[in-house]
Image 1: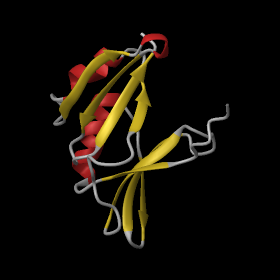
Image 2: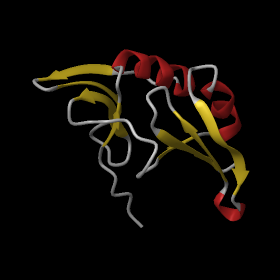
Image 3: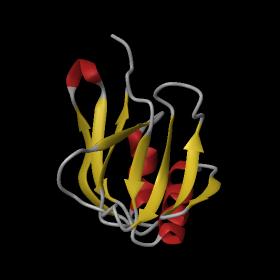
Image 4: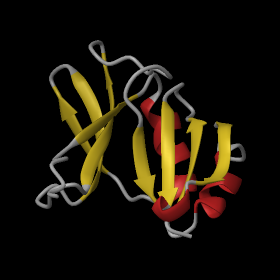
Length: 121
């Protein structure tokens, strides 16, 4: 099965607060991009499928805990789970065993988005 995800955008109300949150939880590095109607902090490698995205602040993007959930791959979900609340988020589902598929957790980020974590251990 191919990984068809090319790009993702995580909506923010306060892009600097979101950048701080994601830097603390995932140690991400960002590149700032400003468009006519939006601000973005890009992360990952945009020339590789399934690896890049951005935090975006624009009038057309609204943070939400409903709908699509983006999962970040982790070495061990337990590490990121411990950083979420300290960084300004709220843990929804603690590290949970899903059998042969590994482990997952979910949290609300600093902006109000529901985000998932996944690891094999």
